[in-house]
Image (cartoon, rainbow, N blue to C red; front, top):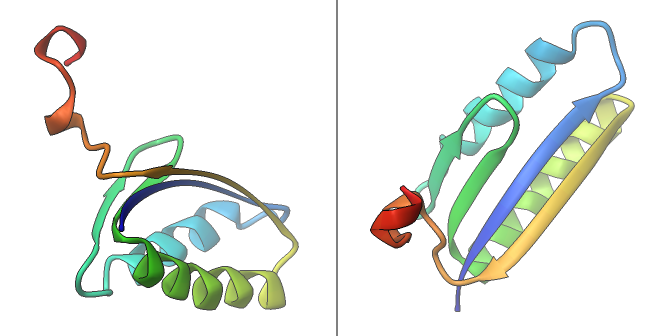
Length: 89
């Protein structure tokens, strides 16, 4: 099953920007998924099981090293901007 995950990472540290940047850079290293980053969140697109495998590893790594809060939204399907109706683009 294809899925979309939107993630907001809020590190509870003074160097929050470095933690978020490193997290996003690690996500972009994975093959088989699409990663889009903007100023508020990061979106992942791909196979549900693969996304969960990646998140299990990467989220755990952040929580082991930093105090942080994650906000996640998940949906079935690939919900990229390109798939929106023209009136919403």
